[in-house]
Image (cartoon, rainbow, N blue to C red):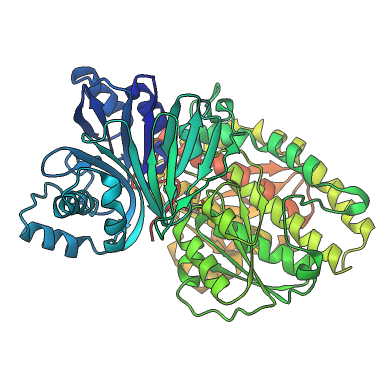
Length: 612
Ligand code: M6R
């Protein structure tokens, strides 16, 4: 959460920083600011709210220069306000810093520095660092940040990616990183720093992802990096593959809608990449040997939010096809629960962003117990990918909308492929059966398109139920996670309270909520639990709940009972969650529009949760 960017080059720094910040807005959007060196002087501009407010401020109070840093904030310490927006400055207004992360001992540092006469202006944890830099410069009688950064790193506790601009050194941007993402981007005669590569394409042609405890500085043409022992580090640059076209909204009004509609094409790409010969799954990037995987006796999945829902479906795949006992944990629980995980346990971390703090902590926990960690990530340059023993690329392309959509279905299909891969190693599913499953998977993109072509039906549902106070989602087995996911999507972007339940649990309490005002979305495709879902629907009907059913084409029972029906094409049980979630993504999106909510940037949220 929070996005930071830095630039030195020949361009006007304002526009570079603003473009970068807009690309990083998914990381937080409650306030934003920049600091630049304008004619040798440090100038700061900041504003509450989205980047466009900062842009408007810059029209009234312009700044000029070729070197600067910027920040878009998701508040942790101190309310979202202009005052608490980054960059933060020292007493003498010569140094500015932007920070992503949390400084845990900031109160102690603040108290000590106030005693020494420092003037604090904000409620943020970040401000402690800039005053600490200033104090260390005074103590060491230096104006050079390189003389004081090592001792500041020694004194701060917590997570950070920090960029620093100083009027005393107007041709350098300093950085330090521990626990929060930061990377360097290079082009001829220009250098960038950013939380995410999306901020610096297409300009940056090569990049380097900093490791924890690295610090240093960039100039227009050079970079200097030091490790935790303050020894120089030689970095290896990688080519930037991401193209700007992948970051555009195209003709869509919102990223979320674009991302929902991208799903069929993403699946075509995934199917082509993953389908090997003779019923084999191809995972070219996954560096765990068959020998290691063949010895796995237990799997623990750790993930958060939508990725946790994918994990719940993944458990069913892994147990069904690979016959490996699998547990699924919320990352925020896993990291504190003293799990039983030993050498033959494989820990799977699922994360679209690859930066979720709790999931990363789960990986550290697993590695401390000598477990192998395989991550499923959509960002292969992410911290989670790099800290795992191996990763699988979800191949969904950049997901910008805060509500995860295409990453979820990509997680599901990759978990299914992985279960089939394991079952191949263990000689469990015969080749013919795997080929039959591949055939069914190949039909998915067309079936997804068929569903998307009927979006108007879902628009009607959204219009009809936009003022409901509560929504309930019911599903069983493969579609219990779909119920959880449908409820999460709706509440996060339309702010309607929604809960998902397993159909079988309904009578154990939640049914008390039903009356004629409550819409109940029943996910009831033709599967082995179909009849059980029909019973649930009858129970809702008997209590006058409004039934919105997702069924398989040709169903002749549920349409007789339900108030509204949306048909999906037939697929085998295990593929149903990949299709049933699509109408629910659309329902959340259109309901948000009906309620004048901004689906891409819902209140209080940020796309990647990089703090605990
Ligand atoms: O990047 P991750 O998959 O690790 O993110 C996990 C959750 O923060 C994320 O899925 C969140 O729940 C989404 N906003 C849901 O749409």
